[in-house]
Image (cartoon, rainbow, N blue to C red; front, side, top):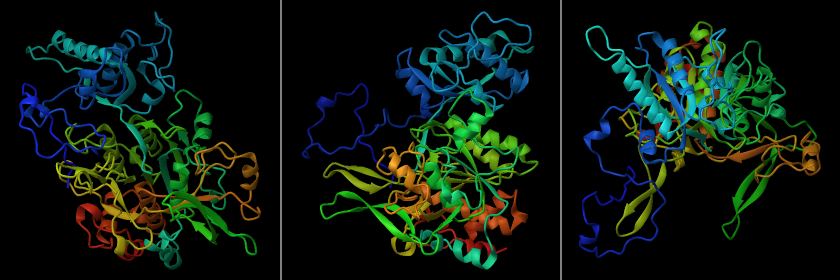
Length: 573
């Protein structure tokens, strides 16, 4: 059931004159962003400044700044390159903007050239990130400058009418909000039959490369040592899209670190392997439980003989799109997608076979046609180029419905798939119980379909509850389960947890569709390693896994086609 919102009095009405209700107003209203007005046909009117940015700019102070994605007009008379150049020059000329566009050879600039990239949050185009895309410019502008840019675009159409008197095409197509993305925060290997397939078919993931768009991957974690999962061959190289201007070596080194820990946990589900040595202490993982008072307390699992990803030998490409605090922008993900396109030659040679995205942002259907945001468009384009894209559905499938009698009532929420999970060609994954999906079904928090325009999502479900995987932080610099840095004494123990008397765990427990998506990524990597004829055919692969999924007998907008099943998929072709 979709989230119900308490309507506000419309403008021009006297709310005080309304008859009093016999039911007292509820005191437990959830914090929310209520609709400002009910549906009107005006909501569908075309706008250069896309929703919700238009509403924010309208209500903002002139000096308030926004991260934006500028979509250039492919129909501009000079072509896409000319449109980019013109827009960049216009933006560099706006007040308060530092020049970031390189000048043509021999042409002097009247202002200091300085990159608008990096963490400094200044107005202008992010030249470092924008170089990855030909279709978009990424940057930051004030509300006043955004409106000025649109007015300038409209004036240019008037000034350059065609020979028959029609308005010319502007270089500016649309300005989008650069949404902030966030993470959607091992017995499960048997639940999806990855272990059985490995024994029967040797589905190790060998010679497959999977990109992980996340917070980075801790390259020092021993889980990735045995199979050298993060050792890649040129030109494939790890890259950080949160740093701004830096050398390729610095960007690669930064992507091999993971202070937040989310990306390392995700990567460990896809690939890698660590075994406890015979006669020594077994692998330790940190978990959580509730005590007799209901308080959450830390605990440990100390009897794990082996930890393995779904495709232990699969190579991992770390593309860091969230910074050390776990924050990032949709433009970081778009730039990472463009980087993969570059590595693959636009599909001419598939070096990166798949992508895992356990990050995203909430979607409001009225903003624009569902699945047509810049991020979703680029995801679909990547799939059409031959790359499999697996996306977490999101953790917004649970919230509150408003009841006049009871106030805010906890309830499941449909139409809650997050972007980029709304992308039609992506494999969007919801969450189930790690061991007993037939009994417990779909996780209460897992985002549910359909999409805002009525399409089936999620596509599949996989284990996402209390999943044990890699814990980053083996140099004393990364966040641990408590959120604090690892003490020096712990850091020394982390060098070999199987021998330390009182070890700090290499692994930890986490839940969310963030954990479900990498199960599917790893399973598909394992599949491709033994069914190589399907490399470069992502839509065929998606159909194979959807047609062989196990029906959990849940509603289709909860489970999609069902629980992913590697054995059935392999045996079907």
